[in-house]
Image 1 (cartoon, rainbow, N blue to C red):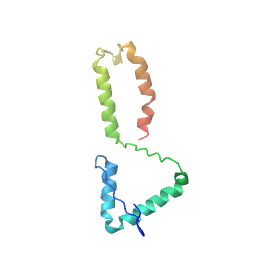
Image 2: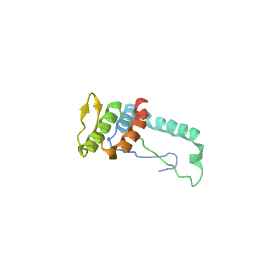
Image 3: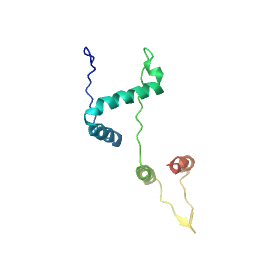
Image 4: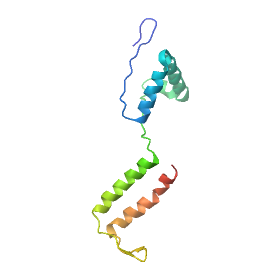
Length: 121
């Protein structure tokens, strides 16, 4: 809101992600300098994205969740365990898997192709 010689805003967000907690704690640590920091951050954003000032331009904010390697592994493990729960058990003969359900082969191939994503973390 703009008054005669000032702008006044109230910000609030939940503490449900690490990024939101970190941002809140950082701003809290600034004490009375929060406003100056926000002005500098917005100015830097506008310098990097001048199209944001175009009249009628809609600002698209995308929040990306950051996962640790351990969290990704836990998610993948959970998905695999869920998927494998409906499959017949595997048997091993001389360290070679001898029974792979036919319907799992394409999914398994696709998963193995995508493993490069996890090795880049």
